[in-house]
Amino acid sequence: MGDLLQPTHLLVIAIVLLVLFGGRRLPELGKGLGEGLRGFKEGLKGINDPVPPAPAVQQTAAPAPPPPAAPPAETK
Image 1 (tube, rainbow, N blue to C red):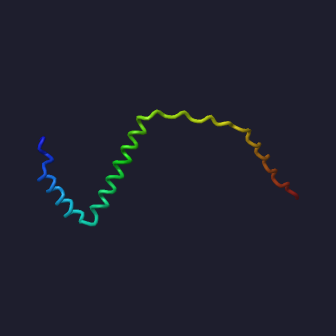
Image 2 (cartoon, one colour; image 1 turned 120 degrees about the vertical axis):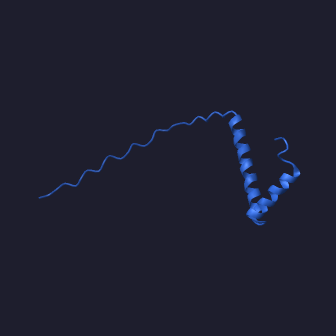
Image 3 (cartoon, helix red, strand yellow; image 1 turned 45 degrees about the horizontal axis):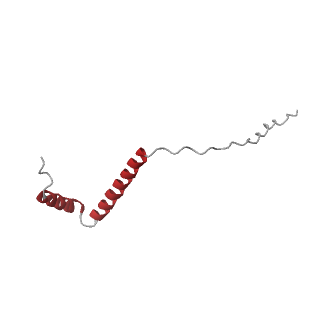
């Protein structure tokens, strides 16, 4: 099991990927994989970092809501 990533195995995997996805698609896949790994690492760093305290928010008195409109008077 320790001989899983020998150079010949990596070469066969690279050839299979080239056949499946083509030469034009492989750089896009590599870029997406790299961005995904970068985001994953940043997410892990965020878990380990302590959460900064939330800033104190002053609450001001909200204006009173307007009174409900009176229904129009019915005339007969």
